[in-house]
Length: 355
Picture 1 (cartoon, rainbow, N blue to C red):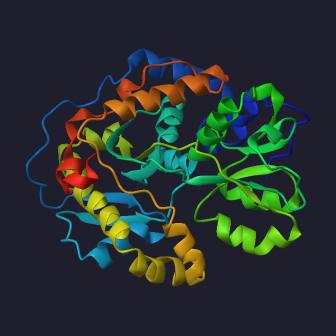
Picture 2: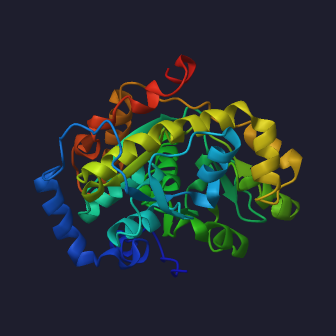
């Protein structure tokens, strides 16, 4: 785990410690400038094929095997292509590295990883959008903390991953509370390090997903840990893929064929909370049934808008917020969206899940 900075945050430290082997700091700036200059140059605008060619395969991310379980329980039709591998990978920085290594073709993330990939000079596009209206994260305190509101974050050490959803949720919460970056100490970590950092007291606050917080409180609430809820949301749950994948007509057709089942799997999960609680949270995550129910009670109703206008506006606000803090360079996010896929998810679900 990276050592804690004495104060504030070193932007270059983020790029070297959080992004890992993807690129060195010096190379990133040049790549970012190159990416910004070329925009979506080289991205295909060819119409999507109506049928997936025989022999097509994709390598798809499925963190904690959620997608396979959704497809199985919902009894969705067999995909018209081969999934050569399901990768248990979810964190944005890990996904970007897997994209670079060509070991992954399609991933499910929040809005911030595509922005981070662009800053690194890696060309990838968003192909599907699910809008979330309710918060997916809470702020957890270390054991023995007296922090009770976001205003109390002033002067405290906050776990921060600039390449993941948790990072933008934290930045938006700080902005809403009127706190500047220099008012807190941002500690560069990836989300899989947050729990250890909290437990050891290396950070005062870390954003935890609604799925993580019950187990954390079960272990540490008696020792003075607590969670702080806000109304800050991370609006976008999306599918994205490298441009090299989307420029392959066969793979692009397979991506288009996958999107409806991705959407339908989420609708099924939302409509069948009791089964999902038992089959996923209890059997695979080792949570109690009451803990599982407390998580699904906070679940977002899936929403697959026919238009991506709101998503693009949100993504631009996020990119501007990161640029304001010096984490990325300013750019127009329109280049991150492949509009050939716009509306596919919406057409695959009932009207109540479109608006």
